View (tube, rainbow, N blue to C red):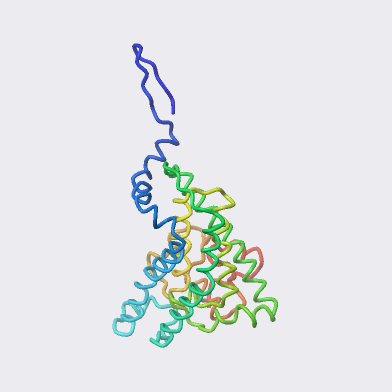
Length: 272
């Protein structure tokens, strides 16, 4: 905030960061209107599941249409494969089981030990965008390291990660088809990064939404014209095609999103 005195009157002008915060203030005020829900121990579970399933639904619709319409099928990464309702039920059952049995008790413990703080003011938009990007980069590195280790050590792969590779043909609901250890490990990375950076709660929510979307898109099984990897230049982002190759061959493309770690490790593959 800076002040200007004119004719004995003092005029107050918001600083640039204040102006940036004001851009998000209506959204944050709306969110604060649901403060009891945000402070509830049930919120992380409901938020995670609802966002995840909402993002999966459009791709499930594409899976249904791809059996009837050729223009949808041409975007499918593995056109010879099809999604069965039994696999949909298995994926949903495991996702719900992991959330209710493992994630929910931990969110209740976290709620008990660290009560939710909801500031009145929204964060500046540039800070929110920058911190979301940093959280994604940190998560990408953490996941790459975890993923590579669980492929290079046979015991770790057999014991913990093999479940996620049950399906060599990816579909949206396979994003969270994993065992408890993998679900909790990646969930810990995602939850810890905003805390390490001291992010505003709105920034945390934005990161979680973006992270869930990118994970679902990675596993969607389609190379769509508006896919994220087509929007990010210079091949810096892998996307669905990148991750689908990993499920097919299992020895390449270990980073979930960006390509720089696989490039440095010599594990990047961009073609079948």
